[in-house]
Length: 169
Ligand SMILES: [Zn+2]
Image (cartoon, rainbow, N blue to C red):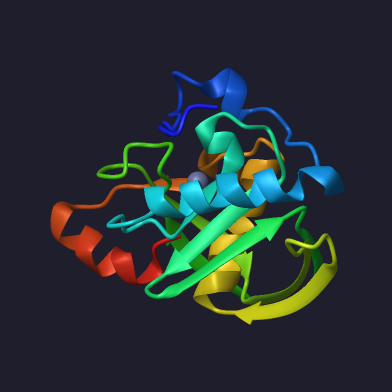
């Protein structure tokens, strides 16, 4: 495996991005975490807050989120519960043109998610607000869903993009 991961983009890499990702087998947990750490590096200096393995061409149920100093790796994640309260959010995605492709979608405000730790144990956590929104965007990637499947394109002017960074996902 090459160390240099490349982020795949839509529509050029649609055939890969549309794949449904498969669970990581327990014996492969170490290499999955290694891949996830490399993926976190790709988020350095980006306004986008999450990345899924399929976006680097690996159809595995792995995604990472990075919100300021908070970083988290999710392997074999499953949303166990969503709040009934929903919120509208404007999202961008590293697999799209991050300067112009913004989509408005509705997401649950909070959720409970289970995932596998490095030891293969199941961890259950709950998130509200921004991390919960990012998680739902990344969970879509694991199913091969992209922003235009769940959202509606919004036209934004350059000066609005700055404001949108508060809702980046
Ligand atoms: Zn995305």
